[in-house]
Image (tube, one colour):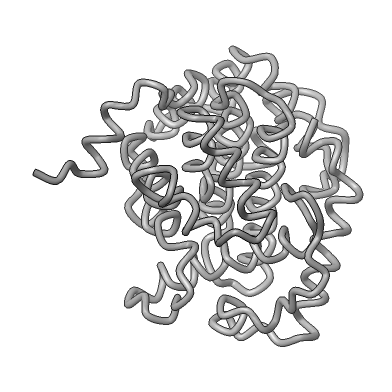
Length: 283
C-alpha cells in the first residue's frame, strides 16, 4: 500500500510545532475583540521576536514618520495582518535544529523571498501583500525540514545542484521520498494555514504556472516566483548571484505582464531595500 505524504509528515517527529508566540498571535487575531495591548503582551513573551518586530517597524521598509519605541505603537503602525506576518517570519528562524552557514542561507532565502513577494504584490496588485509575504516566506520550509531530518543528504543535494549534477527537484527525489515543495505544503497544512497558501507553496517550482486554473492562486504563485527570481539574480540565500537571469523573461513575470523596464525598476527597489535594511532583516 502506498503511504501518503500526510502520513509520512505525521510520522516525522523532527517537524517542529509552530512556535508558541506565533500560535498565540494567530489565535488572538481570531478574536474580534483583540486589542493592540493584548497583541503586544503576547509578542513580549518572546524577547527575540519583540526586538525584531520593533527593528522592522522602524525600518525604511515600513517608513514610519516617527520612531516606534513600544510594541503597542508597532501594532498600530503595522496593522494586525502585517504583524502576524512578521511574527511568523521571525518565529521561522527558530525552526532549524541548528544554525550554521546552511541554515543562515536558508533564513536569508526565506526572508528575501518574503520581502520580494510583498513588494511585487504591492507594485502589480497581483496578490494580497501579506499573503504573498507568507507564501514567499514558507515556500522553502520543506528544505528546512529536509535539512533537519538528514543534513548529510540535504548537503549532497545542495552540492549536487552547485556542481551541475541536476536540478534541485531532481536531486531531492534521489535523496528524499518527496520534493521540498511537497513536504513544505504538507507541513503548512499540518500547521492549519489556508489552502491557497498551501497550494502556492506546493506549486511555486512549476514551470507552467499558466496552467493553474484558479486566477487568484495563479497570480499569487507567480508573485512568489518573481520574488524567487529576484533572490536568484541578487544571490540572496545562494552562493553567488545569477547575473545572467532576465527577470522579465521568466514565465512568472510574463503572467503578471511585467515588462523589461518594470522588472529592472522592481529589482532596483528590491536591492535598495536590502542595502538599507539588511541588518534588520537578517540579524
